[in-house]
Amino acid sequence: MDQRLDLITLGVRDVAAAAAFYESVGFERRHDLGTIVFLPTTGTALALYGWEALAADTGLPALGEGFRGVTLAMNLDSAADVDRTFADWVAAGATAVRAPEAKEWGGHSGYVADPDGHLWEIAHNPSRALMRIDEHGRLRLTPPVTR
Image (tube, rainbow, N blue to C red):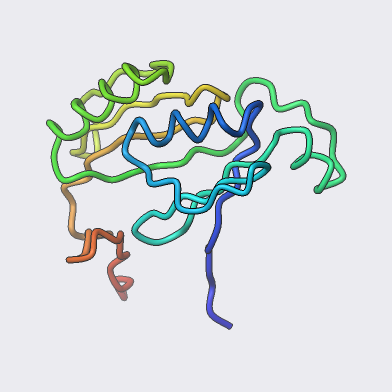
């Protein structure tokens, strides 16, 4: 079976406000059904769905406080792109969690939280040993190294 990740659904407090935020940082509102909004990316699609409704759908309590054990990430072409995108997100209403900085692994990254607290890493990874961005803007992992 192919391993797939087709849709990431974020629980949000206000679907319309969350959709407006994501549009303001460059996402396209492709389908808006009122209770759920779908936004395409270069691969996996992003969905925005009411926090309480999503919790009810899972059968779990809608707590969601603090660190939730998940981050979303975008890998950009340069450190300058990271700095610019980080600033754009903060200007649009995201919270700066950790400012972009040079990393020990040779890249450059920082974290923001969207208005509902979902953490996004905005990064540049210059290494082509593990991954690369293809001609369509999709992240591709390189084949494993055999020892």
